[in-house]
Length: 269
Image (cartoon, rainbow, N blue to C red; front, side, top):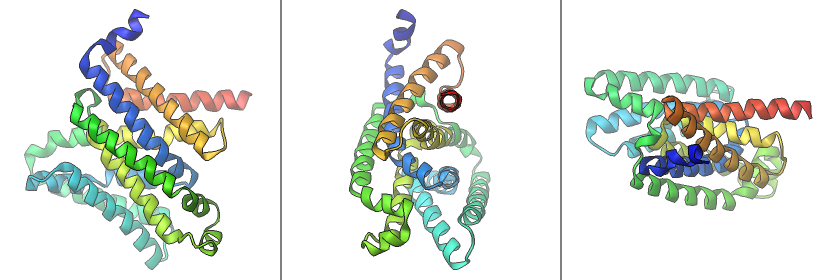
């Protein structure tokens, strides 16, 4: 067991493990709704569409999280507004705004040569460099996400399966839709500074999708998704430690590998 416990004898690995576990919790709760409603493309677009907000915040000397939050909210509101007013399919609206936000972010980044290194951190993150302050922020975000999704559970269920019935029951599907987009924005913004947009998107989709192969009840999917996320974090950190690979990318690859193995095993069963 020494080979298993040895890497976690260092403080930065403990912080990485705790940070990854909290990201798993936030993304499992929110990501379950992303998978159920087929919003994976929106989650990816929102994660990478934060770039102009982060870049602008860096140029103005403002907190990166503030810029990321503003950009994520703008992306969510813009997708809904464009799809409704222009009568476009949602994936078309997401694609248009995704490319537009990404292009705007590159334009802003090009105006500041010194931002290139930070851009790499935004895209790929460095889970081994997260601080105790980052862990604390993730803990607060996890509490907010769990409480918010618990309060909105009934509305989210009705929205996912029958919007007309949701309106009949007075659950305000339009409000529930914006609330869900807000939850996705919270998960993305809370997690990207610690682990980068690559790992955020991977954890929003892979663990809930893997859990959905084995269980059907939504609370069970969320709980099992947390387990798969934490397991991917542990395995990814161990593999990264032994092979010297990038920790964030290795964790994301582990989450995808668990889905692939689960799909094969489930198919065989």
